[in-house]
Every structure is written in structure tokens, then in C-alpha cells.
Length: 82
View: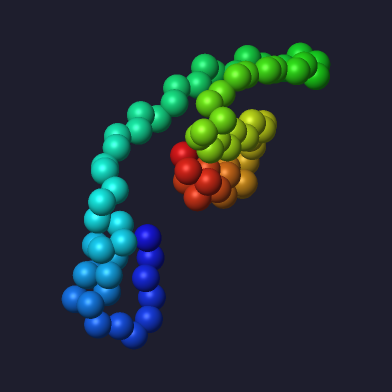
């Protein structure tokens, strides 16, 4: 949660505690995905997942290790959630 603006810290803390204070903390384990095999030609992969969770899976070929875009791709990976 991010709250931005001119506000009284204690008053806002009390309001947030009143609204969200009853929520129970739950631990979520990160899903483990198998490493994708190299594609020789186009293939279709089907995977069933829990529809009550949100997933974003992106697969792409990255630049070579000594390519100028290698460090940029690393930053993009960190931004998208590593």
C-alpha cells in the first residue's frame, strides 16, 4: 500500500488499522516452474493453474552475454519481478 499526500500520520494509521486490521496474515509460497526446453519449432504448452491466483509468465530469447543489450535485459527482468 502506498499513501501519498498531506495527512496526519496518526489519524491515517488509525483509519488504515480500522479498515484493514481484521485481515489475517497469510504466507504464500512462490510457485516453482520447470525450466522450459529449447524450441526447435513452434509448439503449444498447456498448464493448468489455480484461477484464484494471478500469474505472469513470459518466455523469450535473451541477448548473448557480450551483447550491448545484455545489461538492459537484466534490468528489465528485475523490474518485471525476477
